[in-house]
Length: 122
Image (cartoon, rainbow, N blue to C red; front, side):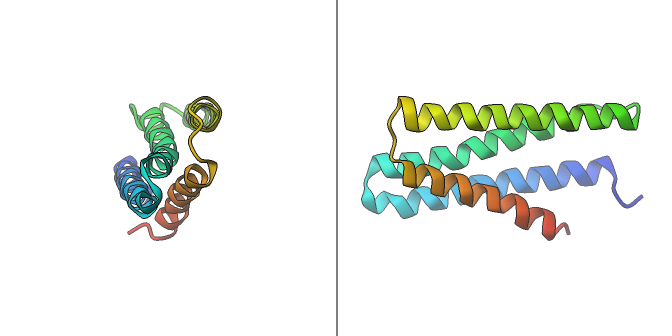
């Protein structure tokens, strides 16, 4: 079988680990500007990481009984991911007033991991 559930779980785990690494790397890059920018860069990437982990947990919790159920899990997981991301962005920039550029840089860098991870499957 080419697209097994186990392969999807492995891909999701690799993407989450890579997003954690990229988030730490962005935090180290912005550490030269101080703790707040470094915290913002890490937190921006962590939002994507948490969202991706929630999506993966929703998708691969147990085997889908039908294609319709699998699609519903994907849609529900994606909606949950973006609720976390948008709510977290509001909290990071609006409530805690972290610098927007590092937050957005960490966010975009972690999102790019998704594109690269899906391009190079194995």
